[in-house]
Length: 255
Image (cartoon, rainbow, N blue to C red; front, side, top):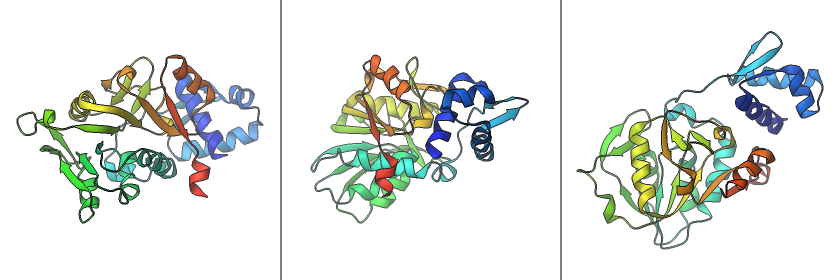
């Protein structure tokens, strides 16, 4: 049921305005079932209802404390998959987003690891561990509890980053990776330009949409890691454009 609601939301996001009868045919379920799913999505403030149909509510960025609990199971599963890619002795960048924040407990058993981050919560969580932490210097962005760098305060060229784990507010074929904040986008651009391998960690709700600021085209990304609510059609669409997507099964991570 939850997976179907994710798929319905993705369908509505893509088509903007959809009639309920269209959803019954698309998902091969009864009108009663669709109405229950729609009621839940309305309760979650994901969609709005009008006579005979529904429309997608374009999101705005909330503060990080509010977003930490949104789609938490998906974020933890994605973060765990990201952490499994990290090898002992590496230098990695972990972004300030709510998905990458969930990586911290899965990194604690790594040896001789260096974590570069612009996230104050991530830095605080790693204090007292065996992980070396490099916090990017610059201006503190209060809503995200992040640091957006200024060149005169931090020299990115001194870093040798093996793997960067970047979050996204929007992912599309046309515009690539996008974010709400210009400052965050600039920091991510700089990190991407000096990283050997770039992973984008984002849940399926961010696909097929663009937000205010482009971070980078998809050609700058090596792998996108997301959850299994992403439709096969979307996966195929991205694969056709040579974008590698790693899908994480949420149910397996909850068992």
